[in-house]
Length: 288
Image (cartoon, rainbow, N blue to C red; front, side, top):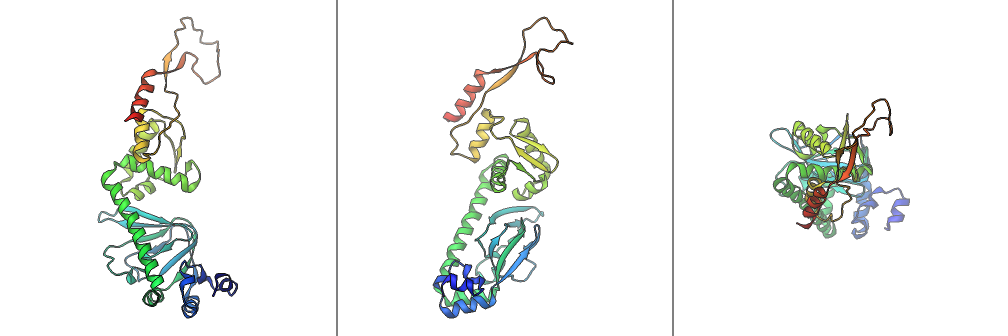
């Protein structure tokens, strides 16, 4: 059955990537059991204490898969977006899975649900479904290994900077409504440590902190130290815009306090000048 024909008949299962490679009988079987489910933002989709949930194919929203350490800290492994399939919610049908993955909804999510036993039956009958599952598992484990490599080889400030860039891309905004606790949960760290690093970023002019949010100051605060941090998380970055300015005291000797020569709120006796040493230090970072 073609996808359009199945969709016209109200069969939501035609959204599965391997639909075209199933027999008519397998397609009918899939149509009978697939159904839509909804998860509110913050809802737990899967945890090790629950029974095997089943396969989820996202239609809208966003899910997060993460680990929970013995100390109770969370570590984000990867995220799932529309048209992605969540396999770990049906880990009982995946042989050799020896660790527990939790899944939560980061946004209001609508997904297509397929019971674990139904999917297991399809895997046993269809080589196409089995091959698709193996390839998807390989992709997921590649993401997990990449995350583990970052955890082991990257400093926490570099991982935090990369996370802020990722969150900005997902939100399509430089203003992020994220608490320090939420950022720490993504990184498997403590809130106090993340708060200290964010204050360092703010001191460098890279972010502006507010209650319950972080604003990325794009193009601001660029210095040799900032370039080093950015390139550790984004090695491909080769061009930066900076003024390299510092403040110097005005040489004006006569000053009359009740007469303003500039705009209110600005110190008219402080001058901004480009510092050659700042530019040399930035150039050195780019050349290394």
